[in-house]
Image (cartoon, rainbow, N blue to C red; front, top):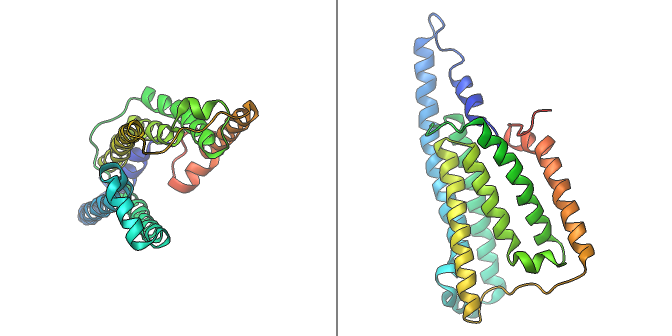
Length: 235
């Protein structure tokens, strides 16, 4: 979700600053952190290229995907797709974590933006719940709820985090989700692309909203701090 990882990490970097006799140690530590942050940025970018790249082939070259599937077989193609996605995801997590050890501030988000981001994440989880469960009335209305969830998630984190690693990570996902939505709409107009789910009973909408709210509460109060080390909501 969102949180002030910048302040926490910068305070760790500065923990020895200003103490007599610690200037050289501080300078050496800062140099190591800066080097690690640069390497982390490269790892993050490589992970984004792999993960979003493999997910973008159908956006920019859908005919190529169909051709490769027919040549290689659907199972083999999906296996390669899954491996590349997994490697990319691991590199993203690893690289982003390294950038947070030596954050490069670009701007300082106002406190109000962090509150807005926390509220936006509720809608992201609601969209995720709608995507995950069978269709009621809301899934056909939202058309592509997973893309909506990703766009809200990315936008919320861009509002809440002003350091370079977060801007690269969440900005890349936001651009990808917008491009994918445009591509889906274009393919649908030519008879291709993912179809819109048919309406189902409203009980699935109620269940989806409850699942989304439950996921939001778990993530906001416990899971985000456990995974990321930052509590988006102080309790």
